[in-house]
Length: 133
Image (cartoon, rainbow, N blue to C red; front, top):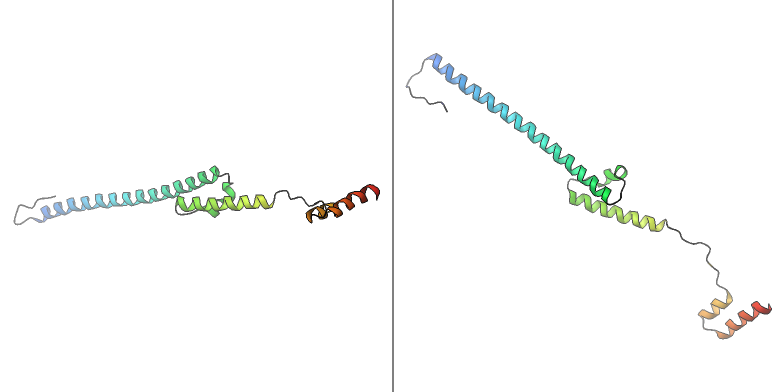
């Protein structure tokens, strides 16, 4: 801080004091601008870091990051992890639905029908009709 000790100053002294203040103000404005740019870079780095963490979590879960990143992109890692879990559940459900399901089931013959009904006569009749039939 510049100390003012005199009661009156000449024009040159006042201009010198103003020049010192203006240089300090310009220096502070430069520092504020640098701080703002650093703050913006920090925000961008945080966003990139979050995206990288989300991609890592998706890769760990076995998802194709290129296909699902738009679906799981979020403003926090916890929300993204919840979305990843939901996608994994959907994928598992789809895998189960797309799995092999036999279509040529054995038709119920007369023996199995009689067996379900606990009809001994029908079971014997069925076996004998196959043998003699």
